[in-house]
Image (tube, rainbow, N blue to C red; front, side):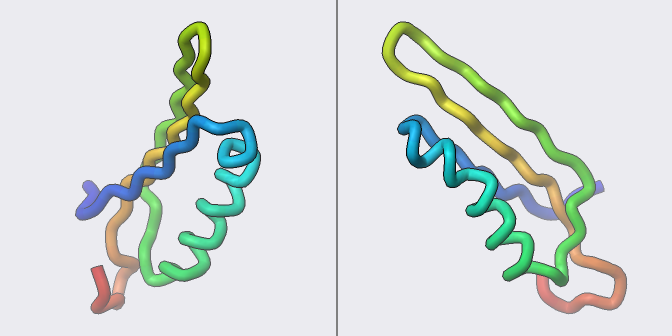
Length: 66
């Protein structure tokens, strides 16, 4: 069961290269949350490539912040 969703998405090459760091920064800033599931999706057409990371989370046991 999850109580929240965080979506990270990038279409430009430099943004895609930095996406992992964005996720890491968010996880560190929200250490009171527990990721219970995730999806990673890549889609593209003739011109654009999109990378999306979706994190499903809930408060850690004993945490007051959601």
